[in-house]
Each structure stands twice: as C-alpha cells, then as structure tokens.
Image 1 (cartoon, helix red, strand yellow):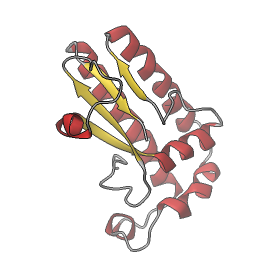
Image 2 (spheres, helix red, strand yellow):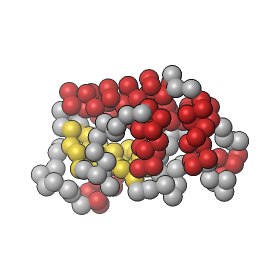
Image 3 (cartoon, one colour):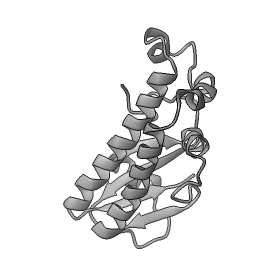
Image 4 (cartoon, helix red, strand yellow):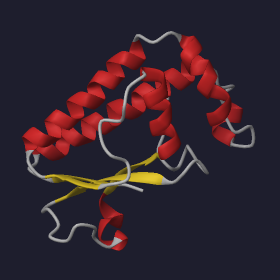
Length: 152
C-alpha cells in the first residue's frame, strides 16, 4: 500500500499542501518557502476530485483557499470529515474504483508497472492516504500545533 502524495501521483497537479506549523500566520497567504519544511502531504487536486466522485460528496474544504486550523477542536472536527470519507470508501464497491483506475495508472510509472495495479489496490491506497492524513492531523493536534491547508 502507498500514500498518494506528490511522489506517487506525479503530473496530476496542481497540489494542495497540508502543513503543520507551531503558530498561525498573521498574513492571509504566507510565502511558499515558509511552509516548505512543514509539509506532511501534497494532495493532488485530481485525487481530491476522485475522492469527491467516488463518495459522491463535496470536498470538506475549499481547495482554492488558505485555511488555518489553530486549535485541536477545529483539527479534530476536520479530520472527522476525512474519517467519514475513509468509511465511505471502505464500503464502496470496487467498480467505482475501476472508473478511476485508468486515470491514475500511468503505465510508464514504475510504481504502477511493478505492482500490476488494480481497483482493489487503488481502493486500499486511497484509504491508506486518508488514514495517513488523519493520523498526522491527530498528532499535530495533540502537540498543540496548527494545521495549514494551502490551496491551489
């Protein structure tokens, strides 16, 4: 299984950056370099669209905005929405994933080529990606850090 960050889902951008920072930013959209070291995942907009399509729901956040969640309650509330997506994906039949499979499987990419990728693996990887994101959010909330979502 794999976490679908920028390193796996290549050329499917633009990417939405999820970052952890110690303190919230004063300015509405900080310099990209200020966030560079704090990114824990870069989520492809196309992957976000796939989540929305498969779950038949809207995104739980605005992918074009700069969002700061500064207290643990806000972070846990947001992560619970992703947890609901994870639950929905787990109970979704494989044929929904088959429709997305050809889009995400670039035959020239070694990850997909060596794993003989199929709908069941796509489903597992999409769930694993959400699980990773939720886990990271819970860790940073427990440590009193802020979650930054830098949109497109």
